[in-house]
Image 1: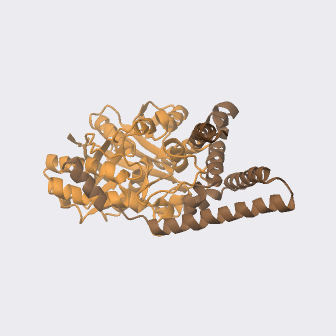
Image 2: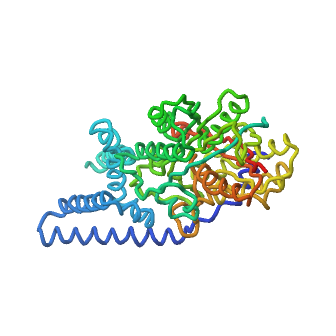
Length: 146
Length: 331
């Protein structure tokens, strides 16, 4: 059997993933996290009276804190498996990836374990986040003068 | 390459499993079941050593022998540089051969043992293997607490250690023949569809075995692959029919599907995998069925996907291998 024919056979027996259900889940869970984020923003601005710029940072810190805490408590991986992109795309996915790596490698030392591996999953988010921020910042500066 | 044996006998087996396997349908056939994936150790890797070590302790008790009575220990696992087996071998102080064929490791060990026993180079050999769901997950995929979603075709590495004691002294079950497979690569790259990677290798080895021995599939009460999973099983039935004109659909099953209850244990997706998966099914269920004379002839075809994360990231296809042994009840 040729490789192409075999690919067809493999495809024939591949089960369908429930794409529509996954999209609905991701939309509603991701949307809920967005609503929680905005509620927190309102809370920080109106009740604690911080500037909206500082409040945005505080919202991120809050979400990262809870996603990391829930990962450490051991049940957040089940939530992520269920909610998929709904939990992975918001900042909660970044926190979950970072904390799970830290937990996994804690037994291999502070430097060679946690230090070297904490950004195993999320390192690319940081790297390409910084690179793209630099590029878009530069474009904004050149076109609009900052 | 098919080799026939005259004097190779299976005496005893042992099975040590983790919590997921305990909840599966074969629990009553297992010797020891841990509720704790850590097995009171501090890491997944050390836990795997514990599982494997315990399977040998259980086996030695069953056969009433000490490590000094054993000529050779052959073992392999999935950890980098097969370290679980090496650690156990270091405890045992029995001459040791480490082997690797991914999920086909254990059958490779039995083939080597059978050849040595039949040639009378050794009299008493223990063949073992282990895998651990979370040490495999950590090494081949993501950190264990990471909950990234998996497709339905993904398989679930079984947790446990399992051993078999073989000798050229007579018993009621023998290794009748073995077929050493060749590496087959049909350009598959999806690690979440291992069944599709390994099915052609299983087909090639089954075809070779049946032709070399001039047998039909119905010669065996059961042809057993370890471990293609639910979708790999369907692929194999179609592929071997189209490619080699062999119909195995009537007496064929897969160890990965038998180890878990696929309807209730949703987290296993397409079924079990890992070298210990086929070892647990055979050493638990199949040996028991042979002893009770419910089965007389079994063909076990253990398949392995021979890949490393490094090669995968370098975008190379994944080759696969399958080795077969024929188990027979001695009347």
